Picture 1: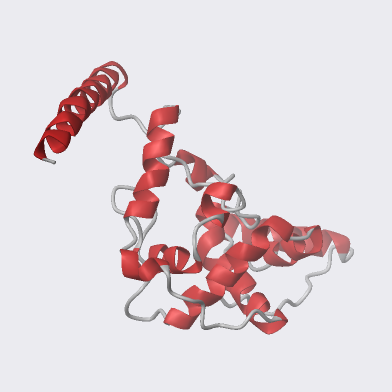
Picture 2 (picture 1 turned 180 degrees about the vertical axis):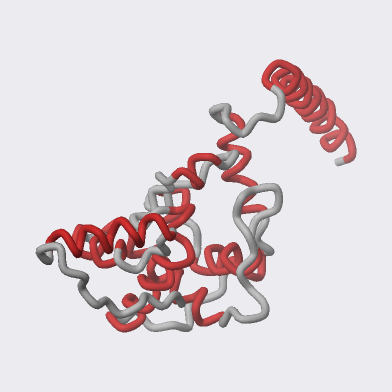
Length: 203
């Protein structure tokens, strides 16, 4: 039996050494710039890191939150206010912040994410992933139920409608310049008269 482990080591060591050497040479050539496009190997490693970040016991956890329209509405608002800055309203990751990460924010609609278990998604939301742009949201001020609701919303992302995206756009955090531009547009549409608007409250 020992010879099998020895043989596996003989095979694995050169592969690992070669990969480490390739990463070293690439780093020497490109530096640690986050503007570079991740290679296929780095993309695969990042996907594996997401899965390896989850303890075995967490993988099989079942979502205790029911799949209902009310839950989806709450999660949609939470996503628009907290998650869309990196992941986009539609989960594509097509935002300046999401694309500027290394590796970029993943497409949450794609099989690499959708094939993960509810327990894996929940754990990542709560605890983040080391050496990536994904922070840990669990802890003070964040209810576990909110994370489970977000898991429900992630499952919904491949079927999200244009109407839902328009509703979410109104819930996205706005910069002072964006708020001013929206106010000017409203005034223009209102015939140049200021129009009273209720303030937007973030969750």
